[in-house]
Structure formats: C-alpha cells, structure tokens
Image (tube, rainbow, N blue to C red; front, top):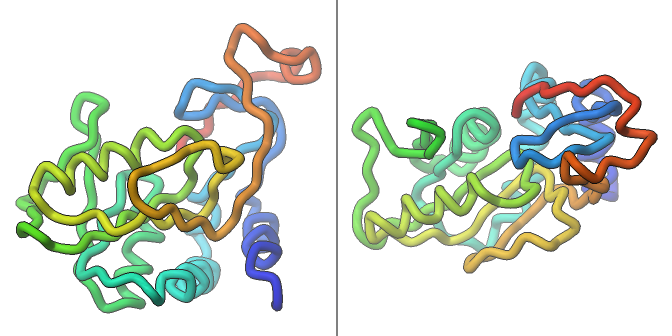
Length: 189
C-alpha cells in the first residue's frame, strides 16, 4: 500500500482493534473510539508489518536499546527491537508508576528508543523518558503506533507516530448526550 497511515488504519480495522462505543481511557478521559492494540498483537503478521513500517520511519535514528512500557508497548517494542537487532527491555507498573525491574539497567550515554502503542496524554511515555534520564542514558525518540492526541502532546524528544488520528475525548463530567447514553467500557490498554 502506498499510504502507510491508511495501511495502519486498515490493519487496526481488519484485526478488530479499532472499537466504537463509550470507553474510559487510561487517562481517565472518555471517548467514542478505542484502540485495543492487544487485538492487533494477536496477529503476528500484523505485528511484523507494523514493526516494519515503524522501523522504516526510524532509519535516521541511532539507538542500541528499545524500552517499552507494560502493557501496551510490550509486543510492538519487542518487534521493533527484533527487526533492528537491538536490546529490548520493558518497564512495569509498581504502585501505578513505571519502573525498571528484573535487573534491567541502562549504561550512561546508552541511546534508548521508547516504543509505545497509543499516546493520548503521554503519561507513560514521559515516565519512560524519566527512567532513561535518571540513569544518565539518552532517550532518542518515542515511536508509537497511534498518536490520538491531535498532536497536542509534546515531548522534549522526537515523537514518531505510525498513525495520527484524533478522536474527541471528554472529561467524565462533560460527556455529549450521544456518548452518555451508551454503556461505559474500560477495555484496558
């Protein structure tokens, strides 16, 4: 396919990963659309293709390690590391805060690419940046499957999305009637 954005969207649709309804996002905001990346990750051909598309966008970057936040970034992060033949580590939630565990460490000046599934407000990506900085390593960029922030989320490092798609989000006390009448789902990231 000539249009990578369209191809990524088609992969999400074909795998049943783009849901419609009334959803509570990890950010606490509500939306009529939800990217359930776990559904994409059921299909290894889709994961491999998404990884290849992401790697194409990363060609100008120099990194030796991929860091992914659990849960959402685990599969795509590992696939990007596999295709780039780089080291792969992940951060896990401990008391709702991401941490490196299992003996994972970064060396000073180690160049780290952060890979995430969906960014709405960028909280988990920022936590990963903080982890990398705290060990005096270098966060080179954040690569993501989907930027659903309408390009409003800004980082101090480059952000590289495969798909930029902005669906409206709403605070829980300001829902449009069309959303408020639907049953609320919290499918998880």
